[in-house]
Image (cartoon, rainbow, N blue to C red; front, side, top):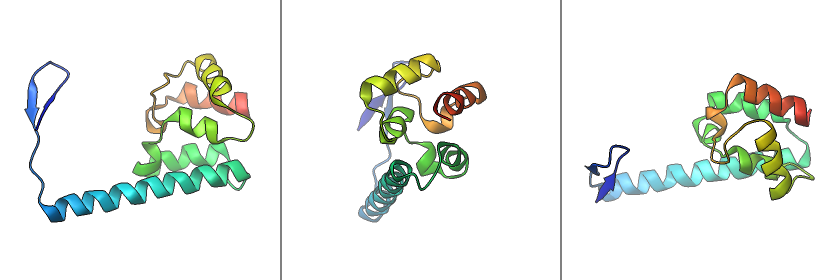
Length: 113
């Protein structure tokens, strides 16, 4: 399979064995489950936004969560409000938690307290 890279050149992907493919599927399912559990805990008030941001630095599966999805998981925040919050904090809608800068994190924490 060929996938274009940023420079517009095709890059060949390594063919995976069945065992490698199964392991990748297990890892993906585990990561999705972790993110879903964290969003449920955040919505229930069991964890804080600050805790989630700290965990994103240490846990790769959490770090790959989109900031927009995290905001929607918060009680009382829907898609429209999450979009406004991200604009106010100068965060791209596609930004992942691990990709947030210090100012963006501080802005989110200040805004959502």
